[in-house]
Image 1 (tube, rainbow, N blue to C red):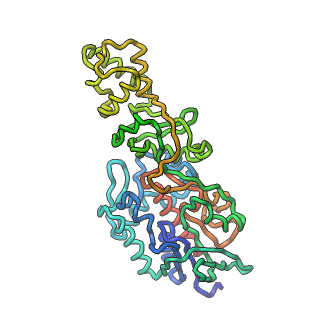
Image 2: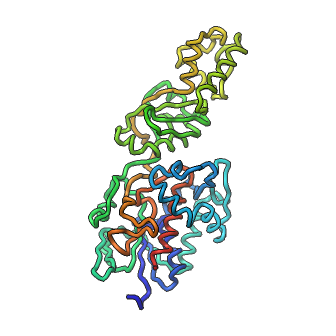
Image 3: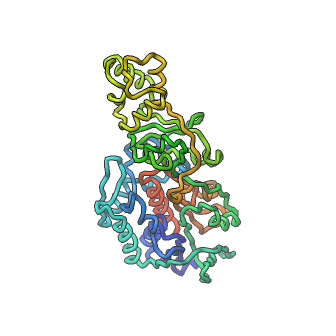
Length: 410
């Protein structure tokens, strides 16, 4: 086998798969590399990310610690970022002719604002390098021969032997795609949804649909789960970056609670209650003759402020000077700690990200090679690594794909 070019299979035609294939081919030009994708189209998830504009990474300027972006797998990502991080990704794509731009929210997109720019770059480069790309090939089984080669069976009846195999199939929401790896001896963390919206049954609250509040601090009472950012009120409940971040960090907890939990919203965006006390106290003292409805603390949207006034048992026509200490405290409490009940996950879309997958304990954290099956590698969301919204999941895919591409041929 040492005298023959390596025969390498990449299972999964997504971000991690393409990066692994391209880097492996560059490192081993003589290797025979094939990407197998179960769907009719390659890079389908990349196509729709960022609303079709492809939020391919993040500047990380607002991330002081990897655990803030990666609720699961942050230690691994911190280690791998020393070898290929967001700056490396930026340089990689620009070197390949893709101009990138960083938005005010630190999300990075192609200047074209079109995900096909990224897709064409990856598929074109793979074709140019001689990487075979096959769709409609869903992996059915893996067997390892005594000589180390891996026998792959696909659901369409195709079978083939390979020297090395990389699994880059993405998340497996129902866990079925992980069964073969469990049977091989890999430890599996049960896959559950991450990055989802919250159903809220409060009819009065839902009448605020379309309202965006920025920023808020959303948290799960009695836990350390907390997220900051814009919150969007929808016809079913809560959405927006703050909600998605919170769902990511609290994914396991909320699953255990069967998505029935309290959520606290601080509409001021200030973590210190004293800031709200000072603001409300100052408004009341300086505007005693003005109606509550006419002055919005923290520039809160008008509809939301009217709702909060009603929620605290007051009338919009009441004057600030008529409020006693208890009334002011009730307003402050609602502004900083407004409690609602989560009544399930939002059903507006399928889960885009899952947490869980092949446990990192089963993987060599330097090479991403399986500890139980030599020659088998893993990269991307098939592993128990996931991130908040903002380009962090794709960055993990580029990083892990790059690492696998640099080791699978050695």
